[in-house]
Image (tube, rainbow, N blue to C red; front, top):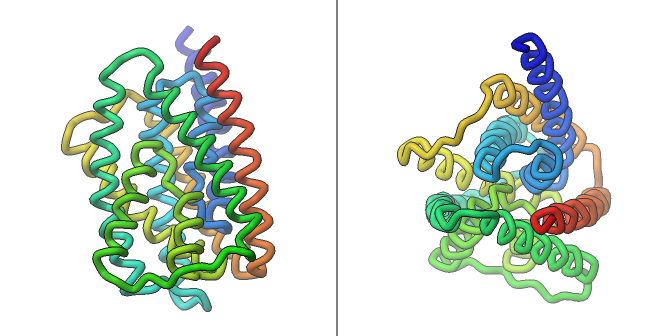
Length: 269
């Protein structure tokens, strides 16, 4: 019996490693981070609780974004130091607030938190998909005000931490619209914001003592996948055009919308 459990756990770890490797590679290229892919896929296939999936996904995205930031040094695309840092600091505060709201909703019991997450995911991904398709026709802003940048970052961090996804899709739409960034610049700044929000959310989870039960082998496998995905993602991104990044982003949004719709339907089965 013990042997069978160990084999099953090893196979799960390998599967989750492959999922995280693919998700964070795509996320590193497009700027979505990977959590927006990992979270709904694990919701669909893992059988783990929503808190465990969110925690493992968050750890993986944290490992991936840290790797991506290190890999981006010396590259042709850079983080906007002033606005990017203001957004990131706001996202860190938002990450803590989002985690608190998540815990409050989860305390209601049942599948409420899962349903809320799936509905929000569907609305966000569909909205961002439509915006991206119509992006060339939409006049963008160029926000410079420090307070406005921080508030925008706080909102991004709050949403991403609550959903346990890293916030990639909404980050990109916001960076396109409010800061007039091109696709590759927005992708890198999005990863920078995600790094801060996920780090804050992770630290808050440790401090509060709300770390869910999980298997260490699964966590290690997922984080290794995240690190390798961060390395591959930055390498591939350097070879792509802005148009190529946009195409990948649209494909990711379409896939996530379908998976989230499936997960929402399963909540009522």
